[in-house]
Amino acid sequence: MKWILKRLPIVPNALFIALLLTGLLPDKTYRIADHPSYTVGLAIALEVLLLAISFLVKKESLRHIFTDVLGIIFAFLIFWILATIKFDLPGNAKQAVFPPPGAVLEKFTMDFGQTLTNIKDSLALIFHGYLIAVLTAIPLGLFLGWNVRIGAAAGYIAKFLGSISPIVYIPYAIVLLPTFRAASVFVIVIASFWPILASTMSGVLNVEKRIIDSAKTLCVGRFTMLFRIILPASLPQIFIGCNQGLSISFILLVSAEMIGARSGLGYFVNNYANFGNYTTALAGVITIGIVVTVITFLFNLLQRFLLRWKQA
Image 1 (cartoon, rainbow, N blue to C red):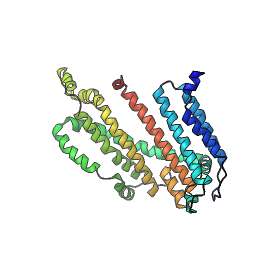
Image 2: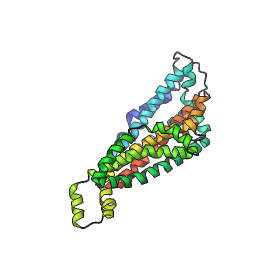
Image 3: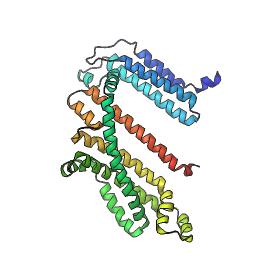
Image 4: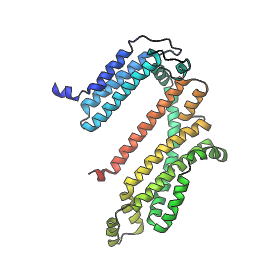
């Protein structure tokens, strides 16, 4: 019994109960129909997840992270409900721009098939552009970082070009390249390339000298030196640039899709916002946040796996 009580997070569970009780408060007049059953269903699903994590995850620090995040979601849903349908806040425009959570969840559920298609289109662009950037920036960064003289000059060029916001390339890429897909991939490559290149060069320059000296005493070849010794030693710094490139890629992708796409998450949000359907647009915004969070989480898992030797 004590073990069960110790595992149960008090604050998140209290917020879950408060969320359910919030639905019992009287509603104010609202132009957009709310669907409280969707909010209740989401709350129950999150509570089941909370209990599963509380009892199944053994690592305390990881368990606390997940339960705290779920508690914050409960608190946000409470605030959202109170601010939209329980309190009569001044202004009629806010009712159209800030719909209640039940209405957004209902749209999210009804448009789920279309949402999956848009996610697939967006991730395909991200994958192609980001993969090209990684496969070109890392080998080039290893070469430039290893060649001190060339790398010093290239470093200034990289800083100059990397300081230019990739957003300025979007209209030029759309006009000059034959298809929007090619333009999007090009912009993602540009956005990801420079932070990955700079981090790779920095990682090479910061490899401990004793490691290189030990390899030289064994008469290690140039190719083996770069890709079997320097590359693994530079991975922590390289991953910093890869993380930055991935984040910037999503920002640029959504921006490009909002300008000239006919599919994808950015187009989905922009299209419905232009027609004043902010309920569906907000569902798209939340979808973007979920997708980016999941991709970042999976990327961090890959990073921890490849750098497990450092954590040992």
